[in-house]
Image (cartoon, rainbow, N blue to C red; front, side, top):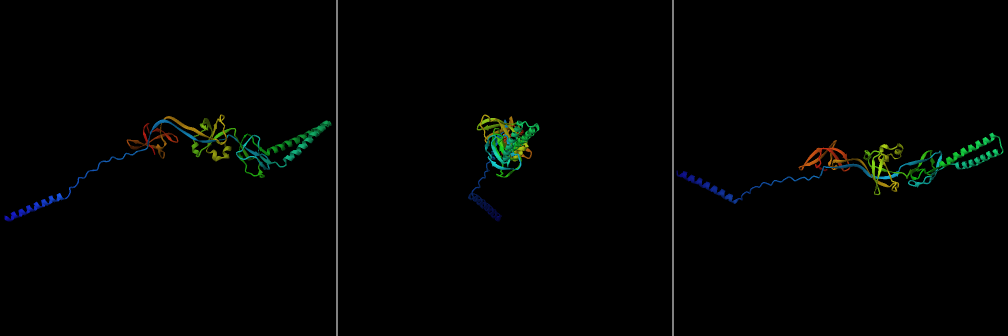
Length: 343
């Protein structure tokens, strides 16, 4: 019994000491700090470059710089055979007057032959007069007259041949081509050796970089023309689809991407090579929905836009109409005021 009491006291003492040590240890080590939950952070708002769908007028037009060029030109050539280039009096870009001698071709002995025939013709004329004065028989007089007429015909032909050896300007104008053959070289019959352009009647020539620019241009379309700040009206008179074959052959590359425009210039002085600004309205529509061109997106044959709704992107398929250099007409899919995200 006594041992049992001693055992209980020992157990009690042991428990007391253990609790005391535990409490002491808690007082020695620092208390663990309470972990605070991180604050909730709202996602950053994405800023998009947007444009509102607006109602207005859209215009598709071709604009550029055109230059004045001669309306017509004429190729000049030597009509005889066996001629040799003798003199060249002009060069390209020279301004000439009607009747000016441009080119001379060596006509050989034609001049001396003409002189001899003129003498023979005078003799024949005197012979006829002599026979008539002598009252010769009618047959002798008639033969003399026929001889005179034959000489006159030959003389006329030689004079025509001599005249043909000089190539003269058929009009006031500008030389646009001169043969590169040298003096003394042979000139073939009907070989073009000089070209003169009529500077009295000028047209505007517009040349595009790409032929696709002109696909929608048609003859008869009006043209807004600005020359030295002065505005006037013109009209398309030739497109790549309407080039005459003989003109196309002179410079097929140029005319396959060019327009010719008639414009009244009587009120101002115009020179060959002078420039003018042109604008041709291809299509126009009023009171229609319009977005910037960089708002339209494509994927194959699909046209679509991205719009912003409550700061969220949405894709919408759209129908398009006129497309200008900077804007697009929207025919379906959007409403006025919608915000389109730009590229």
